[in-house]
Length: 163
Image (cartoon, rainbow, N blue to C red; front, side, top):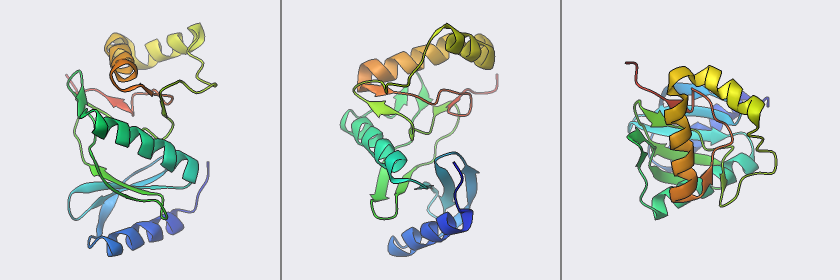
């Protein structure tokens, strides 16, 4: 997915102006949009597309309803605020170990395209190495405790401590 970084940066500035904040720095870019740190030490994710924004909002509402802030010791950002018109999501900043980025996730049932076949398992085993078993436990616990199906499983979204 390509998107206009300047446009999303302008949207972030608009969100911050409305919410009496300011963008402090860029935290990262992904396929769904761009993430900034605000002067209030929060993460502000500006989505490029409404569908990804809506999926992620549903996930954060579910996490909030169930009071889930961590899974197996991995922090999960807390929902703080959002703007449905700007596709903006403000969440807490977390540190490793953590689970991030729910823009591709689904609630209550897996998406039709979720192909967790043998090839996928082998690919993830290689990507996570000796931490794959723990990553699988995190994925399973999110499904069981919250009905959240992670579709974008990778080492950038399930981050382990360096040890």
